[in-house]
Length: 249
Length: 323
Ligand SMILES: Cc1cc2nc3c(=O)[nH]c(=O)nc-3n(C[C@H](O)[C@H](O)[C@H](O)COP(=O)(O)OP(=O)(O)OC[C@H]3O[C@@H](n4cnc5c(N)ncnc54)[C@H](O)[C@@H]3O)c2cc1C
Ligand SMILES: Nc1ncnc2c1ncn2[C@@H]1O[C@H](COP(=O)(O)O)[C@@H](O)[C@H]1O
Image (cartoon, rainbow over all chains, first blue to last red; front, side, top):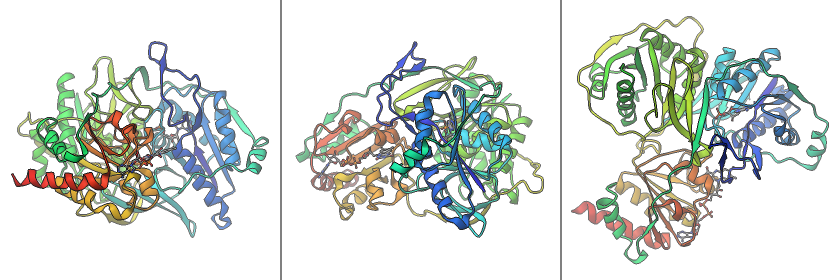
């Protein structure tokens, strides 16, 4: 059985973003790139499943659509424990473009479990995983907070609004994962870092795909009005302000 | 041409977010000279379906089928796509909740339609079709051009006012074509959260951070929330430590919410926390540190100890309610 973890590389989550080119492009100067937090947790869960021999997972592969600039992040995934990597050598222009490139890769070389994060912290699309499943014509389960293999069947927990459901799906499937899928991201150990240097990254040229969407420009959120302070001794006055001034109570 | 809204029901009833979506759709329809058609999947009584008319749906397509008792992304996508095609939908709107996030991307591929996800404003323009959406986890907005003939939007909850601007609606039962073996997801069991206000539905949220000091200190916070009819939430370390349940964790890696009022009690205001709450209309912070970053995001603040401030807030709400 083979697992594919789709990873996106995103600015470190504390980055103060700035834009250039008439606010059309992210200013990448000084940005630290990291594996999207969800994808790091997906990878961790995939490796946990592989660690249990009876699950029968031979290989965990990571896939990324992006330029060579993402290789350090891909190497990090290999250092954490992925067996190999595939990079589609193209600018990730939109979610449909990315999902289509990933679908092409998977059609060439099928996987049983495909994992995507519920959201990339840069595009905030929540779209690539579902699109990928539809392009492949396979089931998807979204908002997955646990994934296990029990006697050869796949048992997933998904969050619904106001509760949880335990579901089974046949492989191959796409799991779109969220909080809970793994507790803490696995960290690369020295040995892993050494081994990662020799693990293969296959570079694939992109298929001709037309994006569905295009970012015309970015805007910064409007600065909020300055904070109005209420004295701690008279904390109760806050309630009157919320009621009469802000009118939210 | 039409604007199609997929409306979800909870035990046969619609929520406020559903009416927000239909209200939103009716303005989009006005902008694009078309009509709103709502699609409901599941058993909902006509009286409930008719409510959608008040918010601008001129037609409600109702699909009932035992195969659709649980969410199977492929089966639901197929039904929505059939109705979208039948109704000649130019815009399809879903909620940006877990169901919408599961379905919209599949529908996008099926209808060859670009997505604007998590939008919280009306489209900036219809031709060309441009929407504004969250980017960089709330640190920016992207103006997104959707280039395909059909467009899909997922609407953030609590981002649009409910408006009653319609009247009666036509209800049509539709027999969706669902072949054998379409449904592949088998739901083994369901655990529903009952008797609690859902964090994603709440107008007011009271949230506690590490400044609450111990899981034993939550009683006044919970009382305050109950008095306000608010949902409770927390920062990540609080749920990681097991002080509060995981469903309450807000932020980049937790829930993203946009209530009218968010109380951050003993929360420092890290960017990852703000990523989940910065769309709140008002943020109120209580923190001992006057330089805590949360005060830069807040409109009202109290510099003080949560254990002393909370009882005062509880008293004040009781007084307010007594009036
Ligand atoms: C990839 C990544 C993702 C993350 N995602 C999230 C996320 O989704 N959500 C999230 O919340 N965090 C997230 N974090 C963690 C985040 O960076 C912060 O560490 C976290 O939000 C801090 O929680 P806190 O404010 O409760 O605690 P602290 O930072 O410890 O702050 C406690 C605050 O309480 C105040 N205080 C102390 N005593 C009192 C008192 N008696 N009364 C009142 N105030 C008091 C202090 O002045 C301080 O401001 C993430 C981090 C990373 C790296
Ligand atoms: N450029 C990319 N390459 C590979 N996977 C990606 C890429 N962008 C997004 N993904 C995957 O899709 C998930 C959701 O991203 P998004 O739809 O952008 O919110 C991420 O968590 C990744 O698993």
